[in-house]
Image 1 (cartoon, rainbow, N blue to C red):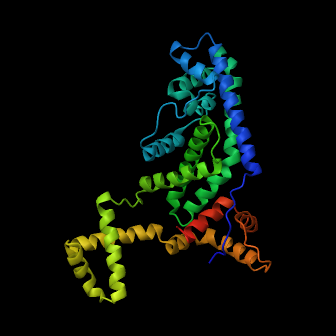
Image 2 (cartoon, one colour):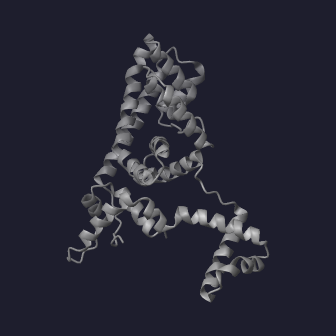
Image 3 (cartoon, rainbow, N blue to C red):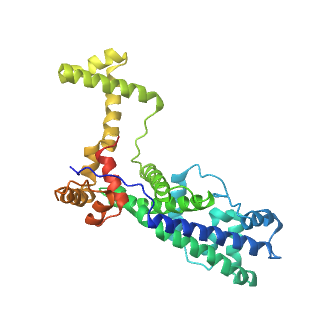
Amino acid sequence: MVAPVRLQRTASRQGRRARQLGKDLALAIENLGEMLLACAELPPQYTRLAEALAGGRSVVPLDGEVTDWPARLRSTRAVAEVRVARPGDRARGLRAWLGAGLSAWLAAALDERAALGWVLAGPIDGCADARDALLAAVAPVAQAHATWYAAGAERETVPWINLASRLALEEAIDRWVALGFDADLPRYVSVWQRAASRWVEQVVGSAVDVSLSDLGALRSLRELLAEFATRRVPGGRVKRMAAERLAVSEAEVTRLLTVQAAVMQRVDPQEVLRRRASVVRPIAKAAAELAARGDGKVPTVAAVARRAKVHPALVELCLEALDPR
Protein backbone atom coordinates (compact mmCIF):
# COMPACT_ATOMS: atom_id res chain seq x y z
CA MET A 1 0.00 0.00 0.00
CA VAL A 2 1.32 3.46 -0.89
CA ALA A 3 1.64 5.83 2.06
CA PRO A 4 -0.67 8.89 2.12
CA VAL A 5 0.68 11.60 -0.15
CA ARG A 6 -0.31 15.24 -0.07
CA LEU A 7 -1.00 16.59 -3.56
CA GLN A 8 0.52 19.97 -4.31
CA ARG A 9 -1.19 22.37 -6.68
CA THR A 10 1.07 25.40 -6.32
CA ALA A 11 2.45 27.20 -9.34
CA SER A 12 5.78 25.78 -10.42
CA ARG A 13 8.79 27.05 -12.29
CA GLN A 14 7.86 24.64 -15.07
CA GLY A 15 4.40 26.18 -15.23
CA ARG A 16 5.80 29.67 -15.63
CA ARG A 17 8.19 28.40 -18.29
CA ALA A 18 5.33 26.77 -20.21
CA ARG A 19 3.35 30.01 -20.09
CA GLN A 20 6.27 31.94 -21.54
CA LEU A 21 6.68 29.35 -24.29
CA GLY A 22 2.96 29.64 -25.01
CA LYS A 23 3.33 33.38 -25.43
CA ASP A 24 6.29 32.80 -27.74
CA LEU A 25 4.18 30.53 -29.94
CA ALA A 26 1.30 33.01 -30.02
CA LEU A 27 3.67 35.81 -31.08
CA ALA A 28 5.25 33.62 -33.73
CA ILE A 29 1.81 32.85 -35.17
CA GLU A 30 1.00 36.57 -35.25
CA ASN A 31 4.29 37.25 -37.05
CA LEU A 32 3.47 34.60 -39.65
CA GLY A 33 0.07 36.22 -40.19
CA GLU A 34 1.71 39.61 -40.77
CA MET A 35 4.13 38.10 -43.29
CA LEU A 36 1.27 36.42 -45.12
CA LEU A 37 -0.61 39.73 -45.38
CA ALA A 38 2.49 41.29 -46.93
CA CYS A 39 2.71 38.47 -49.47
CA ALA A 40 1.29 39.48 -52.87
CA GLU A 41 0.95 35.81 -53.89
CA LEU A 42 -1.41 34.96 -51.02
CA PRO A 43 -4.63 33.55 -52.52
CA PRO A 44 -7.58 35.85 -51.73
CA GLN A 45 -9.49 33.13 -49.89
CA TYR A 46 -6.84 33.16 -47.15
CA THR A 47 -6.75 36.93 -46.59
CA ARG A 48 -9.26 36.93 -43.72
CA LEU A 49 -7.44 34.05 -42.06
CA ALA A 50 -4.12 35.89 -42.33
CA GLU A 51 -5.75 38.96 -40.79
CA ALA A 52 -7.04 36.87 -37.89
CA LEU A 53 -3.59 35.34 -37.33
CA ALA A 54 -1.88 38.72 -37.44
CA GLY A 55 -4.42 40.17 -35.02
CA GLY A 56 -4.01 37.40 -32.44
CA ARG A 57 -7.48 36.00 -33.14
CA SER A 58 -6.36 32.47 -33.99
CA VAL A 59 -8.85 29.61 -33.76
CA VAL A 60 -7.75 26.07 -32.97
CA PRO A 61 -8.67 23.65 -34.37
CA LEU A 62 -9.28 25.78 -37.44
CA ASP A 63 -10.89 22.98 -39.45
CA GLY A 64 -13.36 22.17 -36.66
CA GLU A 65 -13.62 19.47 -34.05
CA VAL A 66 -12.60 15.89 -34.78
CA THR A 67 -15.61 13.67 -34.17
CA ASP A 68 -13.90 10.32 -34.72
CA TRP A 69 -10.54 10.31 -32.97
CA PRO A 70 -9.96 6.54 -33.37
CA ALA A 71 -10.31 7.01 -37.15
CA ARG A 72 -7.81 9.87 -37.06
CA LEU A 73 -5.44 7.71 -35.03
CA ARG A 74 -5.65 4.93 -37.61
CA SER A 75 -5.12 7.29 -40.55
CA THR A 76 -2.19 9.04 -38.84
CA ARG A 77 -0.40 5.76 -38.28
CA ALA A 78 -1.10 4.61 -41.85
CA VAL A 79 0.37 7.85 -43.24
CA ALA A 80 3.38 7.73 -40.91
CA GLU A 81 4.31 4.23 -42.09
CA VAL A 82 4.79 5.39 -45.72
CA ARG A 83 5.75 9.03 -45.13
CA VAL A 84 8.92 10.53 -46.63
CA ALA A 85 10.26 13.71 -45.03
CA ARG A 86 9.74 16.83 -47.16
CA PRO A 87 10.72 20.52 -46.77
CA GLY A 88 7.07 21.48 -46.29
CA ASP A 89 6.50 19.26 -43.27
CA ARG A 90 6.95 22.14 -40.82
CA ALA A 91 4.07 23.99 -42.48
CA ARG A 92 1.97 20.82 -42.43
CA GLY A 93 2.63 20.58 -38.70
CA LEU A 94 0.83 23.92 -38.26
CA ARG A 95 -2.44 22.67 -39.73
CA ALA A 96 -4.32 23.17 -36.45
CA TRP A 97 -3.56 26.89 -36.73
CA LEU A 98 -3.63 27.38 -40.51
CA GLY A 99 -6.25 24.90 -41.62
CA ALA A 100 -5.87 22.28 -44.32
CA GLY A 101 -5.93 24.72 -47.25
CA LEU A 102 -3.40 27.32 -46.14
CA SER A 103 -1.01 24.78 -44.58
CA ALA A 104 -1.06 22.75 -47.83
CA TRP A 105 -0.42 25.90 -49.91
CA LEU A 106 2.55 26.87 -47.74
CA ALA A 107 3.88 23.30 -47.67
CA ALA A 108 3.75 23.12 -51.47
CA ALA A 109 5.75 26.34 -51.75
CA LEU A 110 8.41 24.93 -49.44
CA ASP A 111 8.44 21.51 -51.17
CA GLU A 112 8.95 23.17 -54.57
CA ARG A 113 11.62 25.49 -53.14
CA ALA A 114 9.86 28.40 -54.78
CA ALA A 115 10.88 32.00 -54.03
CA LEU A 116 7.69 32.39 -51.98
CA GLY A 117 8.69 29.45 -49.84
CA TRP A 118 12.11 30.99 -49.26
CA VAL A 119 10.49 34.25 -48.05
CA LEU A 120 8.07 32.49 -45.68
CA ALA A 121 10.44 29.76 -44.47
CA GLY A 122 11.72 31.94 -41.61
CA PRO A 123 8.31 32.78 -40.09
CA ILE A 124 7.17 29.17 -40.53
CA ASP A 125 10.31 27.90 -38.82
CA GLY A 126 9.72 30.42 -36.04
CA CYS A 127 6.24 28.99 -35.41
CA ALA A 128 7.42 25.40 -35.65
CA ASP A 129 10.39 26.02 -33.34
CA ALA A 130 8.19 27.72 -30.73
CA ARG A 131 5.67 24.91 -30.93
CA ASP A 132 8.38 22.25 -30.66
CA ALA A 133 9.82 23.99 -27.58
CA LEU A 134 6.43 23.96 -25.86
CA LEU A 135 5.84 20.33 -26.83
CA ALA A 136 9.23 19.39 -25.39
CA ALA A 137 8.53 21.25 -22.15
CA VAL A 138 5.27 19.41 -21.50
CA ALA A 139 6.17 16.09 -23.13
CA PRO A 140 7.17 14.49 -19.77
CA VAL A 141 3.56 14.77 -18.58
CA ALA A 142 2.33 12.98 -21.70
CA GLN A 143 5.10 10.39 -21.44
CA ALA A 144 4.11 9.66 -17.83
CA HIS A 145 0.58 8.88 -18.98
CA ALA A 146 1.83 6.80 -21.92
CA THR A 147 4.03 4.82 -19.50
CA TRP A 148 1.06 4.24 -17.20
CA TYR A 149 -1.29 3.06 -19.95
CA ALA A 150 1.40 0.95 -21.64
CA ALA A 151 2.25 -0.92 -18.43
CA GLY A 152 0.78 -4.39 -18.71
CA ALA A 153 -0.60 -3.71 -22.21
CA GLU A 154 -0.18 -6.11 -25.12
CA ARG A 155 3.00 -5.46 -27.08
CA GLU A 156 1.11 -4.60 -30.27
CA THR A 157 -0.94 -2.02 -28.37
CA VAL A 158 2.04 0.02 -27.14
CA PRO A 159 2.74 1.79 -30.50
CA TRP A 160 -0.91 2.87 -30.60
CA ILE A 161 -0.60 4.24 -27.06
CA ASN A 162 2.51 6.25 -27.90
CA LEU A 163 1.01 7.67 -31.10
CA ALA A 164 -2.28 8.57 -29.40
CA SER A 165 -0.34 10.23 -26.59
CA ARG A 166 1.55 12.36 -29.11
CA LEU A 167 -1.62 13.39 -30.95
CA ALA A 168 -3.32 14.30 -27.68
CA LEU A 169 -0.30 16.33 -26.53
CA GLU A 170 -0.24 18.34 -29.76
CA GLU A 171 -3.98 18.94 -29.58
CA ALA A 172 -3.73 20.09 -25.96
CA ILE A 173 -0.91 22.59 -26.44
CA ASP A 174 -2.39 24.11 -29.61
CA ARG A 175 -5.77 24.64 -27.97
CA TRP A 176 -4.19 25.87 -24.74
CA VAL A 177 -2.23 28.60 -26.53
CA ALA A 178 -5.17 29.63 -28.72
CA LEU A 179 -7.38 29.91 -25.62
CA GLY A 180 -4.94 32.32 -23.97
CA PHE A 181 -2.77 29.89 -21.92
CA ASP A 182 -4.63 30.62 -18.67
CA ALA A 183 -5.50 27.04 -17.72
CA ASP A 184 -3.18 24.69 -15.83
CA LEU A 185 -1.37 23.16 -18.81
CA PRO A 186 -0.24 19.87 -17.16
CA ARG A 187 -3.83 19.27 -16.01
CA TYR A 188 -5.14 20.12 -19.47
CA VAL A 189 -2.61 17.75 -21.04
CA SER A 190 -3.69 15.04 -18.60
CA VAL A 191 -7.32 15.39 -19.67
CA TRP A 192 -6.33 14.84 -23.29
CA GLN A 193 -4.07 11.91 -22.36
CA ARG A 194 -6.99 10.18 -20.66
CA ALA A 195 -9.05 10.72 -23.80
CA ALA A 196 -6.19 9.28 -25.87
CA SER A 197 -6.23 6.08 -23.81
CA ARG A 198 -9.89 5.70 -24.75
CA TRP A 199 -9.10 6.15 -28.46
CA VAL A 200 -6.60 3.31 -28.22
CA GLU A 201 -9.12 1.04 -26.51
CA GLN A 202 -11.54 1.65 -29.36
CA VAL A 203 -8.87 1.06 -32.01
CA VAL A 204 -7.61 -2.24 -30.55
CA GLY A 205 -11.08 -3.41 -29.53
CA SER A 206 -10.54 -3.48 -25.77
CA ALA A 207 -13.06 -0.76 -24.90
CA VAL A 208 -15.90 -1.74 -22.59
CA ASP A 209 -19.00 0.15 -23.68
CA VAL A 210 -21.98 0.11 -21.36
CA SER A 211 -25.25 1.28 -22.87
CA LEU A 212 -27.36 3.83 -21.01
CA SER A 213 -30.10 1.23 -20.69
CA ASP A 214 -27.71 -1.09 -18.83
CA LEU A 215 -26.43 1.46 -16.33
CA GLY A 216 -29.53 1.38 -14.11
CA ALA A 217 -29.79 -2.41 -14.32
CA LEU A 218 -26.13 -2.83 -13.36
CA ARG A 219 -26.56 -0.52 -10.39
CA SER A 220 -29.57 -2.48 -9.19
CA LEU A 221 -27.74 -5.75 -9.75
CA ARG A 222 -24.75 -4.61 -7.67
CA GLU A 223 -27.08 -3.62 -4.83
CA LEU A 224 -28.77 -7.02 -4.99
CA LEU A 225 -25.46 -8.88 -5.00
CA ALA A 226 -24.34 -6.92 -1.94
CA GLU A 227 -27.64 -7.77 -0.20
CA PHE A 228 -27.34 -11.44 -1.15
CA ALA A 229 -23.78 -11.54 0.19
CA THR A 230 -24.97 -10.09 3.51
CA ARG A 231 -27.76 -12.66 3.67
CA ARG A 232 -25.33 -15.41 2.60
CA VAL A 233 -27.55 -16.55 -0.25
CA PRO A 234 -26.16 -19.79 -1.78
CA GLY A 235 -24.36 -19.18 -5.07
CA GLY A 236 -26.63 -21.54 -6.97
CA ARG A 237 -29.68 -19.42 -6.16
CA VAL A 238 -28.25 -15.97 -6.89
CA LYS A 239 -29.17 -15.76 -10.59
CA ARG A 240 -32.71 -17.01 -10.07
CA MET A 241 -33.36 -14.67 -7.15
CA ALA A 242 -31.80 -11.72 -9.01
CA ALA A 243 -33.97 -12.45 -12.05
CA GLU A 244 -37.09 -12.48 -9.87
CA ARG A 245 -36.20 -9.22 -8.10
CA LEU A 246 -35.24 -7.42 -11.33
CA ALA A 247 -38.19 -8.92 -13.26
CA VAL A 248 -35.93 -10.19 -16.05
CA SER A 249 -34.88 -13.61 -17.32
CA GLU A 250 -31.96 -15.56 -15.89
CA ALA A 251 -30.26 -15.21 -19.28
CA GLU A 252 -30.44 -11.42 -18.91
CA VAL A 253 -28.93 -11.65 -15.43
CA THR A 254 -26.11 -13.75 -16.88
CA ARG A 255 -25.48 -11.10 -19.54
CA LEU A 256 -25.45 -8.31 -16.96
CA LEU A 257 -23.01 -10.26 -14.81
CA THR A 258 -20.72 -10.64 -17.83
CA VAL A 259 -20.87 -6.90 -18.52
CA GLN A 260 -20.17 -6.11 -14.87
CA ALA A 261 -17.18 -8.45 -14.80
CA ALA A 262 -15.71 -6.75 -17.87
CA VAL A 263 -16.21 -3.32 -16.33
CA MET A 264 -14.67 -4.35 -13.00
CA GLN A 265 -11.65 -5.79 -14.74
CA ARG A 266 -11.04 -2.33 -16.23
CA VAL A 267 -11.70 -0.18 -13.15
CA ASP A 268 -11.16 -2.37 -10.09
CA PRO A 269 -8.23 -0.78 -8.20
CA GLN A 270 -6.59 -4.13 -7.40
CA GLU A 271 -6.76 -5.22 -11.03
CA VAL A 272 -5.42 -1.88 -12.25
CA LEU A 273 -2.49 -2.07 -9.83
CA ARG A 274 -1.78 -5.70 -10.69
CA ARG A 275 -1.68 -4.83 -14.40
CA ARG A 276 0.71 -1.94 -13.77
CA ALA A 277 2.81 -3.51 -11.02
CA SER A 278 6.08 -2.66 -12.80
CA VAL A 279 5.23 1.05 -12.49
CA VAL A 280 3.56 0.94 -9.08
CA ARG A 281 6.29 -0.96 -7.17
CA PRO A 282 9.03 1.73 -7.26
CA ILE A 283 6.50 4.43 -6.38
CA ALA A 284 5.13 2.42 -3.46
CA LYS A 285 8.67 1.67 -2.27
CA ALA A 286 9.64 5.35 -2.41
CA ALA A 287 6.51 6.43 -0.54
CA ALA A 288 7.05 3.80 2.16
CA GLU A 289 10.70 4.83 2.64
CA LEU A 290 9.77 8.50 2.97
CA ALA A 291 6.93 7.71 5.40
CA ALA A 292 9.32 5.64 7.52
CA ARG A 293 11.67 8.56 8.20
CA GLY A 294 9.86 9.24 11.47
CA ASP A 295 9.83 13.03 11.11
CA GLY A 296 6.02 13.18 11.16
CA LYS A 297 5.85 14.75 7.72
CA VAL A 298 3.52 13.33 5.09
CA PRO A 299 5.42 12.69 1.83
CA THR A 300 4.49 14.97 -1.04
CA VAL A 301 3.94 13.95 -4.64
CA ALA A 302 7.12 15.77 -5.65
CA ALA A 303 9.20 14.03 -2.97
CA VAL A 304 7.89 10.57 -3.91
CA ALA A 305 8.51 11.30 -7.59
CA ARG A 306 12.09 12.39 -6.94
CA ARG A 307 12.86 9.34 -4.85
CA ALA A 308 11.24 6.94 -7.34
CA LYS A 309 12.85 8.83 -10.25
CA VAL A 310 9.55 9.22 -12.09
CA HIS A 311 7.41 12.16 -13.20
CA PRO A 312 4.95 13.50 -10.58
CA ALA A 313 2.08 12.79 -12.98
CA LEU A 314 2.90 9.09 -12.73
CA VAL A 315 2.68 9.28 -8.93
CA GLU A 316 -0.73 10.95 -9.16
CA LEU A 317 -1.99 8.27 -11.57
CA CYS A 318 -0.89 5.64 -9.06
CA LEU A 319 -2.67 7.47 -6.26
CA GLU A 320 -5.88 7.70 -8.27
CA ALA A 321 -5.76 3.96 -8.87
CA LEU A 322 -5.39 3.38 -5.14
CA ASP A 323 -8.24 5.73 -4.28
CA PRO A 324 -10.49 6.15 -7.37
CA ARG A 325 -12.93 8.38 -5.48
